[in-house]
Image (cartoon, rainbow, N blue to C red; front, side, top):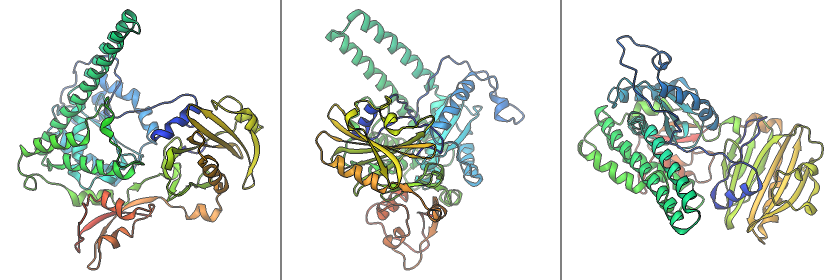
Length: 501
C-alpha cells in the first residue's frame, strides 16, 4: 500500500476491480519492455583504454539522457530501489559476464534492483536496466537471471526503443489522417484497427528478436542457454498461482505487446538446442546465486504494509483489517486491492485529510462518481469517526466508507454486480475488522524473506513446505518458487528456498 503521508494514484485489478476506477478520477499505468523516445540516436561513445565511471562514459550519450529523465519515475512507480550489498554484487556479476558478449560491448549499463514484489524486468535507452526483487526471488539460479538481463540488453543494443517510437509516430499520423478523411465510417474504423494490429505485431517481433539475441548471449557467456525457457515456465507458473482465475486464457489479449508464454518457451528451446543438448552445456550458477539471495525481502515491504492470509497490517500507519474468506489480497504501492467470488472487488487506500473537517462533506466533495447523496451517513468504526455512502455506475453497486485517524483519511470502496447481496456482507466485514494496531502487534510485525535451507534425512516435500510463512497455500508456493513439478521427491542435502521471517 502507499507509504505513510502519500496521496495514492488510482488503479484497479481483475475485471470487477477495474470498475472501481469508475468512481475515481485519473489513472496512470506503466508497461515493461517499452520506452517513450523523442529523438534519434547516432552512436558517439567508443571503448576507452582506461576504466571510467558510468556517469563519465554516458555524459554525452543522448540515449542515456533519455533514460536519466525517465529513471526517477520508474523508481518511484516500483516502490524505490532495493539495496542489499550481497544481492547487488550478485546481479552485477551476472550483468558483467553478459556485457562482454553483448552486441555492443562498449555499451555501459546502470542496473537497478526495484523494491517491488512484482515479477518484472525492463530497459530504458542508454543502458538503464531494471529488475525487481520479486523476479530475483522467483529465479532459482544465476543463468535464469542472466536470461532476463540478456533479453533486456538485447532491447538496448537492437535500438528497439527507437524503432518502436518511429513506428508509433507513423501509426499515430496515419490514424489521425484516416480519422479526419474517413470520419467514422466503416472503412475508417477498419483502417484504424489494421494500424493497431500492425503496431502490436511489430512489438511481438521485437520481443521475439530480443529472445533470440538473449539466448545466444547466454551461451557465449557460459550460462545454461536453456535457462530462458525454464524461467519463462516459472513465470507462467507464478502467474497461475497468483491469478484470481487460474484458468483464464491470457492469450485472448489480442493486442498484447508480448507473445504468449507457450510460443516464447517453444522458440527459446529451439534456439537453445543450437548450442547443445539440455543438461550438457553451460553453467547454471545455482550455489552462488542462492547464497546471493539468502535473506532477500519477499513480498510486501514494511513501508507498504503486510498481507498475512486474509489480513492486511500496516505497522507505520498502525492499522489493520480483514477481507472475507476466499478473497485474494493484492498489495500495490498505491492501494490494497482484493477480489473475491461473484466479481466482488475491494479497494483500500489513504489520503491526507488536509483541511477536511466533515467526513460527510468529504464524501460528497466530488471524488466519487455516481454517489447517491441520500445514502450518506455518519458512522463509527471501532470507535473511530467514519462516514458511509452508496454509489452506482453501469452494472455495478458500490459501498464507500471513509474513516479518519488523526490527519489521515482511509477509504474502502467495495464493488459488486448490481443487486448482489454481497455488498452489505463484504462491506460489513471490512468495517467491523478495521482498527488501530496495538503497540505489541506493531512490534511483532516482521517482513518475510527468502531463506535458503537444506533438506535433512527425514524431510519431505510436505515438511519443507510447512516451514513457509505468509501464505495459506504453502505447498503450492513452495513448489512454484523452487520450480518443482508435481511428484518431485526431496533428497537429503538438497537446498531449497522457503519464505519465512
